[in-house]
Image (cartoon, rainbow, N blue to C red; front, top):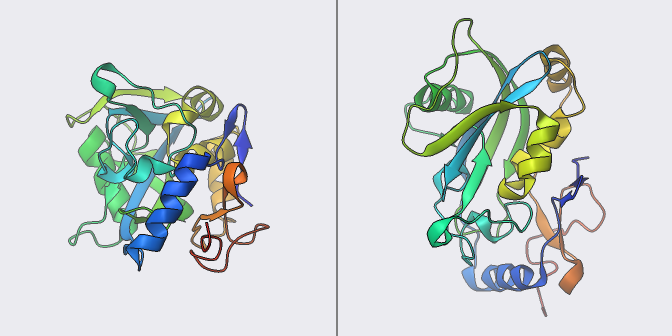
Length: 249
């Protein structure tokens, strides 16, 4: 099952105030928002194993804008940790991978990731494998059915920043990336880096990808008060429905 902790980061902990807001939103909103399809691409190179990491200013995964301290949007608890990485004016810095929403003219969600890599970095993907599929929790007002892919670049291509949104990009080891920036990533992205830190080569990552279970991972809130956590299907305490642990809270 998916990694829950890595170094100082507890990817699944939910602070009490956030849990109260999320559960109140669940009660008030009725039916959860329909998830939009999206893709994120983890570009790999070696040796040693490195991932291509982007830093955005005030930008949530897949384009949902947010400010540090907001009570709405993906930052509520979908992002791991409590470190907003604030800069001047309370704007936050976010780390992640090339990716975005599926567009009507994308042949499939895999090509969404390929297109996003080209648009954001100018590079072309050579090989790719699906790594995970995460669905945003039901309490979020903007939700995604997001596929995460691992990929290599076509020979001769070096990624660079092409669009205005990313302010910084670097090749970095998965372990270093999650240890330094885990609190400024989404849960799926931080978890992916923690998982990739187990491997030494691109070949090992691709071999592992062939064995991955691509059943969608839909986190739900479990536990009371200061013991609230995000749990995944198959884990102890996973609610049978979004409101299972919300009534009476």
